Image 1 (cartoon, rainbow, N blue to C red):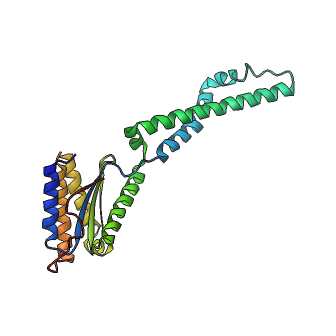
Image 2 (image 1 turned 60 degrees about the horizontal axis):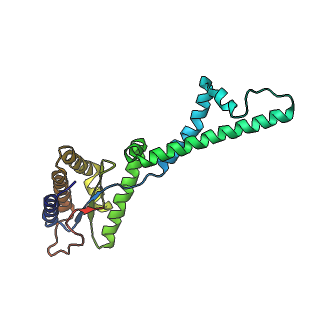
Image 3 (image 1 turned 30 degrees about the vertical axis):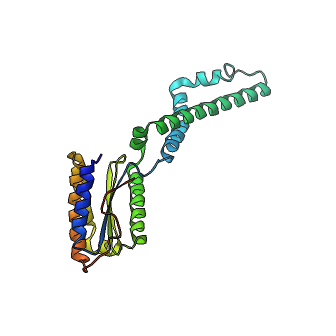
Length: 226
């Protein structure tokens, strides 16, 4: 997605932005932030519960009953009980086959799995991944940090910041940075989008956490690819 020249331009933008602030900017590009294993299971469960009753409702019950040995004609209670047991077992087997088929198909088709995953869940996983990176900046000694995080498969971007700078800049500031990255990606120039977002975030950091002179660069200026 990004060339060496793109990486160089992003690193240069981060270095320039950090020159006027005591804060740090971290850019991250991830292939994906989650495997979403629950998505195939959820859809497979729904299909296994819904498809068989719908099949029966639309007149496919003779096929199910044929698995029990023919029509529901019994000469005694024992035969009837046996027929019911076989029919229920057949019904359960049909549900199991549907579950395995649907779960397997969705699990193997990543684009389909992502399409069937709720946007809210993808956003929550993206935020969790970005917050983990933000926590890492604190462990590395950053006094105030902003993380610009993009997820390729999810096609989503988020910007998170330490509480001190977040409260000062407000949500609108980070929304604008997100919009800048997305605009660059849609225009086929993701590096330009990152650079624009870096400049915005650098401005907020410089305003609220100006440079105090000599500084220790706690984080790499280059974009991190996961």
